[in-house]
Image (tube, rainbow, N blue to C red; front, top):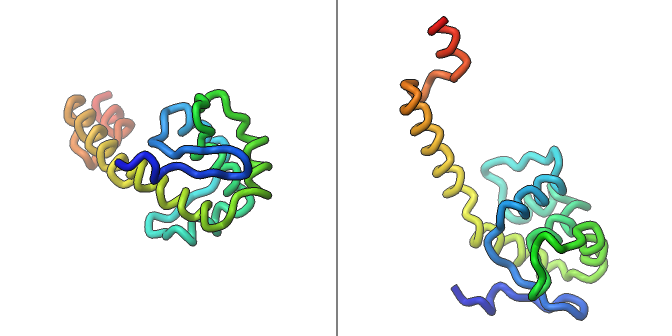
Length: 137
């Protein structure tokens, strides 16, 4: 991976994009709130759905060089990005987010993990835990 590819100079500051850590996933969930993205959505669609939340989501995704993700002021950075982040940079950041964080792959792994849990509990994939618990009682 070319580390220079995932760097931006925005305003007077250098930012980097890298795979999210768990804390950033929580930050992103806090910013996105109740937004649901359809499975077949494209980058322009994501940007449209995020609307005014886009700069704040980018505040989670972009991290100032040499800054720890937990030390970011998401609200302050989002407000700053609203007036300093060029649209082309925002689009590139969203595209890079999906390159660095392959959501479909992660969901497949989680699905496989759930199947393994069901298997370990003696359940097949079509039963829910509640349904199998009721049958046993």
